[in-house]
Length: 263
Image 1 (cartoon, helix red, strand yellow):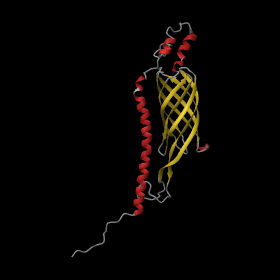
Image 2 (image 1 turned 90 degrees about the vertical axis):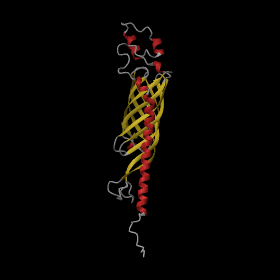
Image 3 (image 1 turned 135 degrees about the vertical axis):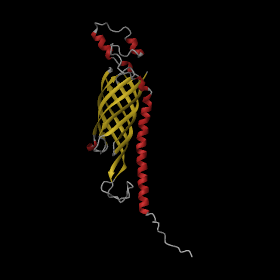
């Protein structure tokens, strides 16, 4: 005779199943967030990789003042060059970068910032396209991503810079940015096992949440140095003014590389 015995296999608790599913969903969302930042950064790096070979071990013009003879316009202007005793002429041809008028190319920069409500500095990366409308005015558009172990930001930015048309070129500028911010928040009282460790609402339980849209503007200042007629290095500092209020404003300091094509 076959006797039906009650099953001793524990049935899954619906609440636990829901929490686990929710935790997996949150984890998937966080993965997509980091993937988006990675893809954006990789895109800019790929654009720059082939052009990096243009960077010579030493800046051009170390042994002579006519530093940009690779550029046709510059070469035509200084074909004869200043006399050895013409100090003013030597200085002029050593500093002249007016030939960049109409040039364009890709840029990539990185920096450190304290962004949004984060208590920790965020590493940032930017990449995009820049255009010299004149030898002293540039405009650009690209992406910006910032991240640390708790927070993240991904968006677009645009800006303009007014600079001297010289090889070593101080500049002032301004820009706008907008995108989405992610923030790590405490979830030790929401009744959900957010980290899928089978413990609900432990003291240090945290979760990554999309905190919303973040817009901002910034003034900036910095300096360019033309390593060669096509390769430019940049150092800059910005004051970020965000829609989160003045308590969330912060500073960003960064360095950048641009590879310019001919006009």
